[in-house]
Length: 271
Image 1 (cartoon, rainbow, N blue to C red):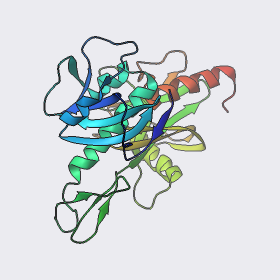
Image 2 (image 1 turned 135 degrees about the vertical axis):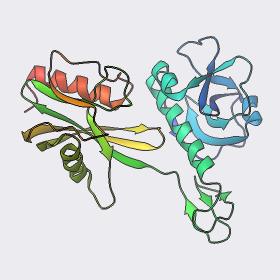
Image 3 (image 1 turned 45 degrees about the horizontal axis):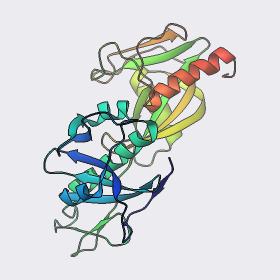
């Protein structure tokens, strides 16, 4: 299904709409699974929202991010992460987009410079201060992810907040004045005490918890012994590529990064 982004709805909306509707921090999903668990609803649901933002069209149907005062009949609330696991990839990405737009709207109701209530800016996704004219756009926080490898092995680590037994690639936020590559080298050194080389870009993913942009790399081990960073890394180990622990599912870029890297190592195309 083709998604066409936009910020303003057409004068004549579609009879049905993709409604990525939230009550609090829970995404509304059909109570009874529709084919592919598709959150299509009569367009009248949009009028019930206390906050609404037009996202564009998906397969020719209007697409909305909505904040509802209560769970509507026929729907059930689901935590966003669990919902994204159930939704088809394109719908999961739009659910994440909707969550980020609503969070931006909620957290920028007042000017961060002078405290004046802001208003939505016509013609673009922005909130503007009528007093000092400061403009706030949806915020993105770039974060790198690095999967460190050496022949036959991957370095995986777990944070204290991970699910029991789950390991993943290293990750951390980019600091002011830092390139993505600088961030990879710094974070790997800080989190596990290793030096790396041969960075290769893998891909990126918008990650709505709450507004990250994950940028993933593979990195070849160069030197050092594993020393986990206190309070950040609970455990870090080298794992044989054919004996990995539990890893993130494929709906996250970490899940793709680890599995695709293993496939490349098995094919002899990484090195």
